[in-house]
Image (cartoon, rainbow over all chains, first blue to last red; front, side, top):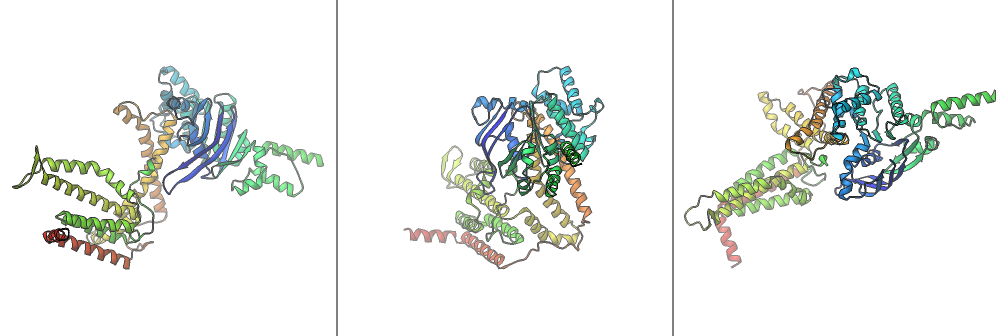
Length: 290
Length: 278
């Protein structure tokens, strides 16, 4: 499913003096089979944008199509497809572990499955829950535990499993690595990459503040600022604009700063800003001058 | 949006009424309520309504926001008015209209409704022009004589302000959890009442957990700053009386006196108006 937004605008508290223009004309295309990163400062409209994707926020101005569903169309036929839309677009909110409510991990993960597949048998449900937990790297030993007894990282995996179990085509995650330790961050992003590569989901959209994680894992990136997309393209295309990124107070991955430092010393290397590539290019350069 | 339904619909402004001392505002509100119940006839009530309009004008709050407060009690007003009409006990010389309805019954019902409405509008002016924080400050200061009998006034005020402060936070949290469960296919709108109540479980449990967590964290944070409600605490915002408060007080006294005089001289005033208009 392709996502196409054109000139999408949205204003909070429209009629009062507290009104906020959250989106001011977003034009963006997110292709299928991609790991898409959305970065931007707090209040740049990222969260508002992703909440449009499954109809939690109705389209106010502009157009938005997700697959073949035109969300700007306010007719009843489209409204009836919202449930279908929500099953296709899985949404993981910030700190998803705060939405866990059931007595056991199994029940919590099964909640979404039962909502979207009310006619499925117990066997199918069991299979789906176990499979999803395994995808998120959680073994069968957790299923009867209370989700509240797990560690922070495990809770988050359970919460993501609770969305993934509804078999979405597009998985949208709002700051999935916020508050995790560096190893946890890395592991979670790698897990998401595996989901995409194995065809469990067709598109992964990640909102993040962490330039390094975005750079390591995303295929395309869009930078939001004041409700608009100001930069977009592959991580390489976006992060080479280190000056603009600093002006937006976002910065670039560590490799970007290193590249700038090197070029001040007269060393020009062409990198795509991932760590592995950077190391490789530097070693290559070193070998050449030797 | 849920967050719009927060308690205490404070309207930010720097008007005359906004800048009054919260203690004065609370006391004057009490005086106003007494005034409404002192008024025994329509003239007195109109006088107190004039006082109310004056307050609204000087508060800079749009009349729409004040009228909104009536919406919540409209049912109560209509209900009491209807009861008043139906159960009116007629006296000699009352004009009978039909069934149990008397002209005097209608008048007394109208009087009561007007009283209730002006009561609520007056109180809403207080919450519209005073932030919850300064309101609790005012209450704490007014209740402080109770400290003499070891009543924990400060703790009570603190609990109140924390409770008020938590409402918008929890409202936001509720909205977030509702959205998260909706994204997992939760359906809050269809089915019968039992089904709808059951659908709220996935919202209420995370909400409760988060409320406890927040409470715990706040307690820890206060402990870490060595908070104690001891006597030696000083205040960041000291409440001080000013000329403004004196003016408000005098205006209220005049209005109150007017209402009392109108109670006593109602007939004279009516006769005077009758003379003017022939």
